[in-house]
Length: 229
Length: 222
Image 1 (spheres, chains in turn cyan, blue):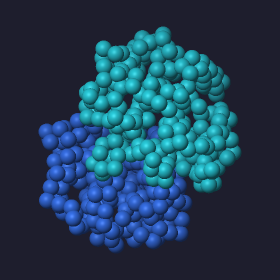
Image 2 (cartoon, helix red, strand yellow; image 1 turned 90 degrees about the vertical axis):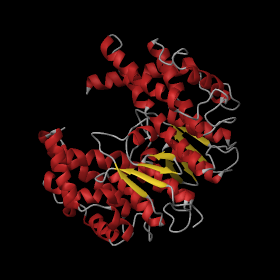
Image 3 (cartoon, chains in turn green, orange; image 1 turned 120 degrees about the horizontal axis):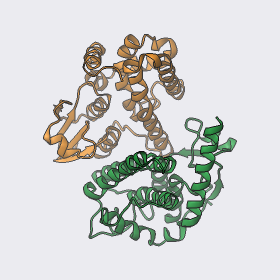
Image 4 (tube, one colour; image 1 turned 30 degrees about the vertical axis):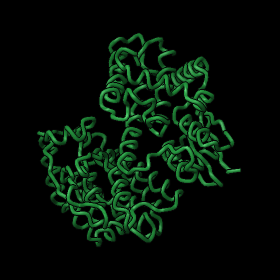
């Protein structure tokens, strides 16, 4: 037993990244589902600086931040490598991983935006699409001849973007609008199809309806909390 | 040393703390490089070509290939020129901790600091409070260690020490005494400045101050 515990939210893209990493490495762990509106004292103790999930606890020691957790896991369990060995390729992968994080606040904005406000909605959509366009046009790791950002196999960049696009799709379902349009983003579209059908990822892909319903609940609760504050 | 130094170029902007990080790392490793200054009002075509996504410095160009984002560059330098001194710890858990604090510094120091020297006047007291809070958090992490890296200067020290060249600016324009709040951190600053790699890479605080004044005049308060 590896003595691994994961504190997370099943629907969070950041938690998904860690789950996929653990599953791809064939590691067993105890899953501790946190409630974002009522975080456990252990979580607050493990991540006192940010008080956020995911937190991986290994032998009682906490590691925070999804991609730091991935690199930690990689260093201890190098099977099915997710981090490029070559320093230059590694620096490229890390650059795009950092870039993928920018999708999160942009998608959150689209979740919380007043859909009836056309101007705000348009601005929020454009923001997400600009980020996607940069990946579509500029990311040298995204090539037609290869299935994944990692080439023939999934790597950290696939995991990083995979989680964010899954989150984006949930927002699309919630708001009934299409942002990742196949005609505008053919490479990304094709890559996401490859990713979600990849072994292990496929078996650990949260149900789409469940994701949408959960986002709806979270949005409603956030709005209620804001109006009562 | 095994690695060819003849084609290492740094695209830099001298007041940038992020650029300073890269200089310190290169100095620590004894890597010779060409430093090219960028003009923010007129970015070079090389910069736009090497960092088309963000169009920002620092960019390290090694054998013609660009690496962007300062902490990413520092890790790259540590990996390619992997002789001592090592910047990142060898233990995976300690590495994750070092990277965590690098990220924390990235998310907080610059943005909170900028609000102190160039923020809205009516928000000044709150901005100062937030900035000091962040420095206190870092001082707590430092604890009794000589460096964030422990006995040896390392990654987190490289990540943070450049901002200390801005302390005089924060204090003068923000009307605060950093030493009064975080004396241990100031002690750490002096210790770092005794290292050649740091002393050579950081501009004089008064030059930073002059730059900040000119910037404020040109751009107004944000």
